Length: 160
Image (cartoon, rainbow, N blue to C red; front, side):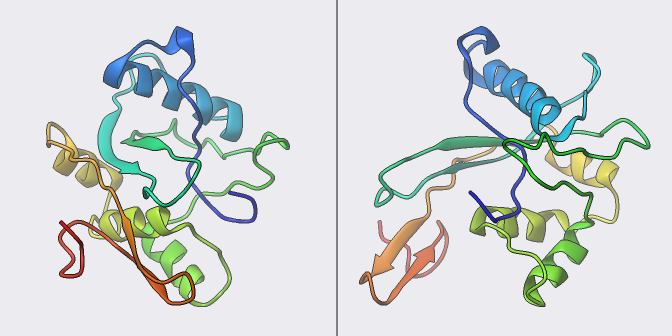
């Protein structure tokens, strides 16, 4: 997503494995490749959310997002290829910067930051999401091409 701030990510490789373990291996690899942050092998990754691209989009993704504690005092560093900038943001400050027009965030990133902003610390976010079932989120686009909106499961307008 050029020009938009998103979390590091990419495709699961054959060597990553299958199911959730494969997505975790992919997340660890992509975090190091795109942001220069290497997680220790024993670092806990907690499944946070799963977003599936709306059906009207031709290139679709099934994106799994994980929470983890980065090593202390580790600044993210862009790889210069897939990422050209990287920074740490408190969720509420990233949302405020987006609202002020100083940061462009993807829709799923906004929704995830809104959830994370509810927690005062990373430990509390990890604790709240550990062992919690995660249902895939499939946004739907309703309306016309000239006048449309994205709705999420649970929204009153979400079609069955």
